Structure formats: C-alpha cells, structure tokens
Amino acid sequence: MILSLSHLFYLVGAILAVTAVMTLADRNHPKRFSSALFWGLYALAFLIGDFLPPAVVGVGVVVLALIAGLGGVGAGRHHIPSAAEAVASAKRLGNKLFVPALAIPLLTVAITLSGHYVIIGGTPLFDPKNTTLLALGIACIVALVLACWLTRETPVQGLRESRRLTDALGWALVLPQMLGMLGLVFSDAGVGKAVAHLTTSYVNMDLRLVAVALYVVGMALFTVIMGNGFAAFPVMTGGVAVPVLIGVYHGNPAVIAAVGMLSGYCGTLMTPMAANFNIVPAALLEIDKNAVIRAQIPTALALLAANVVLLYVLMPL
Image (cartoon, helix red, strand yellow):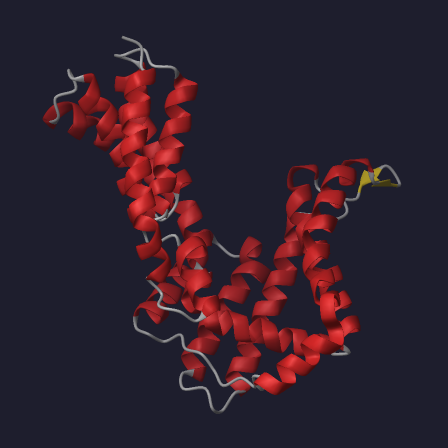
C-alpha cells in the first residue's frame, strides 16, 4: 500500500512535537519544562516508536506516568477571543462554521467505502486493514484546510488551537491508548485464569443466578478498574463465561458475549478511567470533571440490574 497507519502516526507525532515546542517556548507556562517533556516523549512514541526497542518505549511510558502522576502536566497561557469577537466571527461565518465539522464524518465514510477500489500502478492507495483510520486522518486535514479558508486564518493558528485543546485535556489524552493495551497485558499475564480459580474456589457456582450476576457485575467492575470494556472482556469471559456459563450451564456464547459487553459499558459510565468518555467531555466543556460520571451512575446501575435479569432469563434451563 502507499498510505499506511504509520503515516498517520507520523502526522500525530509531528503535531505533538509542535505542541511540545510551543509549550517549551511559553515562558508564562507554570510547568513548561515538565509539560514539554511529557508531550515530547509522547511525540517520540509516534515518530520513532517502531525503531526503538520495546524496553526503551516501556521506560518512556513509565516516565510519562511519573510526570502525570506527580502533577507535572499543566495548561499554558492562551489567547482566547473576547465574547464580542466571538459573536462577530459567528455572525460573519454563520452556518458555514459547520462545513469543516461535517466534512470530517462525510469524507471519512466516503473514503472508507471507496478506498478499497483506489489502486495506483497496481498498488492500493490505502492499507486495507486500516482504511477507516486513514480516511479519518485525511478528512481531518481537509477539514483544517476548509477551516483556514473560511476563517481566513493560517495553519499555524490551527496548531495553536490544537495545543490549547491538548492543554485542556492534559494527561487524559494519553489514557485511552494505554488502557487499550491493558486488556492484552492482563490476558497474557494470566489474570483470566486467576479469576477463574478464585471464582470457582470461593463462590458457589451451583446457583445459576450467582454465576450470571458474578459475570455481569464482574464485567462492570473490571471495566471500572481498566477504563475499557474491551480490556475487561477477555478477563471475565475467560474466567467466568467460558468455563461456567458456557461450559457448565450451556449458555449461548453470542448472547453471553453481547450482554457481557453491555455490562462492561455500564462500568464505562461510572469510571474516570474511561477518559475519552467521561473526562475529555468535561474538560472540553470546562465543568466539574466528575459531573458526567455523577449524571450517568443511576442509568448505569439500572441497566446493570436489567442485564442480570436479562442474561438469567436467556440462559437455558
């Protein structure tokens, strides 16, 4: 292929590198050195991560965690237009403001559907395995061009706004990527087998309701810990669903998996570890970081109870 996922990583790394340089140059930034180091290390993971030994990348991840954990990532000083300037700009642009935003999903879908058929000199233009992500990256670039054209600004202003949003999100921007790998780490470490041993040794699995409740609630709890339902799924499915619900009670694997993932999503609603769902929106809206979670907890608990009843009813007698 001509365009692969690596090219998208290079683009992300370049933007993060610019963010690090801008942060370092911001003399009014209260934590400019540690913040610049944080975003610089994160940029290097995208730019040269494929060429570094895994141990070196692992050390970089640990350093990122230490900087964030010690409060080394902060927000800089940004020029924010006044209310009068914002209103004047909105009136001048009108509904044209929606053009760049709408261009992203529309172009992503169009390129995803047609990308498999674009072949240049016998070589596919897009990596068939990652067409959607590449389409999203191209759509974002086009949207930036449209935004610059409509607002009469330069791409440099786009980079400034990128840095402002990055500062607003802070270390939470890194969390989804790290949590995405956590499930594989837990699986390779044998956590699923440990869960299976503990549940079968100390919980009475002779009662079908107990087994169902353990799986459903366990999926939610592991998701709360890991921040990702996909990370919790291999652990609880390998530890409870396969050996007990399927092996002993002969449950339908498709039904169990579907209800299990839905239960995991209940945990997603209740944890700050799910940064891309719960922390990022609060940061962008500049509200209490736990406000989203508090609003979602009643729905999550009600749905979790319904999942226990649903899976119990759908299990064969």
